[in-house]
Length: 186
Image (cartoon, rainbow, N blue to C red; front, side, top):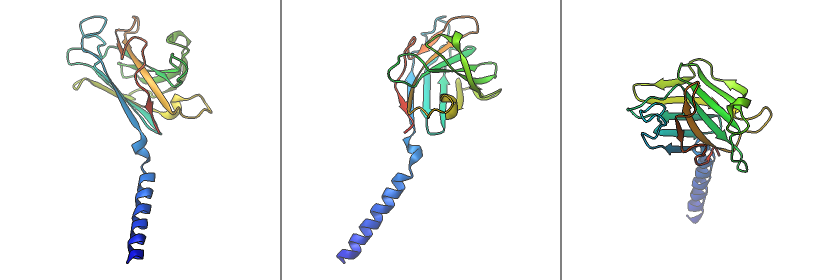
């Protein structure tokens, strides 16, 4: 009887270990950055953001940007992304355009967009502007987040700025040139 109980226990442990080992997608992490409503540069809701959510997994970075009912997302959203713990500046930028032109990813040196090196683009319609629900969704493949031949970054953190084509940022999340928490994919 003891041998049968031990065999059943070992089989149950092996099944549980195998099940836990297959739980790869559960390793993905989501980070949410909340921002106060009404803190935009214009004071009338232009570019005001209330939430940025980043969901990072082994295949994609999924981004959700929410704006308050009292405002609008403004024309351009620039998501500055840092993948290195040592530096305090972004490695790349993911820029979305309210004209439905989709998202573009490029490598940057610091917070300056003048040295933008294009990496990849989602093409027209790659962003989902849901104006009725005040939310923007887009998803970027992991290959766009790394230099050619490099490995996927284990973690990243971001800072969002909204702006027009000609003016400086209207709102920053979590703060001006400030990154949120790290989000890990494994």
